[in-house]
Image (cartoon, rainbow, N blue to C red):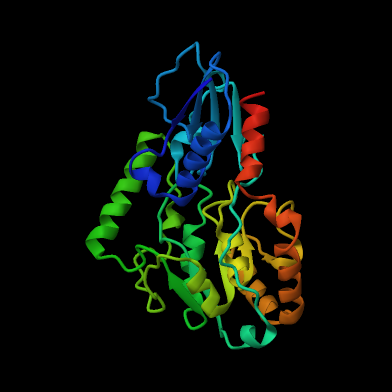
Length: 310
């Protein structure tokens, strides 16, 4: 069997989730004694200009929501044998989330937790999309409304006016090219300068570990990422806005909030009223359990064995 892994091979390979899937697939291929009888193309996200070879079995794995990868909304069912997604994407089969458990996650005592700063961490880039369903503007609303209690980390929060205008023009152009209706309210707080911005980081563990709480607002309600895992592993009680995750992360470890400012603000109060010692015990129990370890790449390997290799 020959496998071609398509997608995220150039600038997009810088995305953590893309790197994870591409490298894991290549490792799986090296570790299996695969038959040469079948040619398979495993596509990480949909590329509309890719050529379809009728003799090749094609599988699509959607790892980016429509708002960040609009082309994922343009694939035709007949282009792929199977389509999988880590979230409620229309027409796709469920792909259990693949996240390699952290080897750095510390065991945290109540005394250590109480030395943390009584603030919330947002660790995400300040992106923009005019496609309906984005949650980037919610991040900005929360960061602005709670500037005294939220620390911001990531890229593009305080870019120059020129860079922001160029970004707006580019995102409008994308919508026009895809014949998408512009969701103008998505620009909320985009031109605001955030005084609570702390800079970009190389490791997520540090920023999450400094504060007692984390605000994990996904890109959209379509797909999930590694953000919730990162916050729990670092020992920060998370507020979570995104698609359902209770199959993988115990509900006792996060506070789920609806995607609006009022709901997130109320959830922040609930987080500060939580019993920290109880949360730390639940975190420790989960991180020592098989259910935490089963999210590793071995889980993804089993998926490939079953769905691709048969």
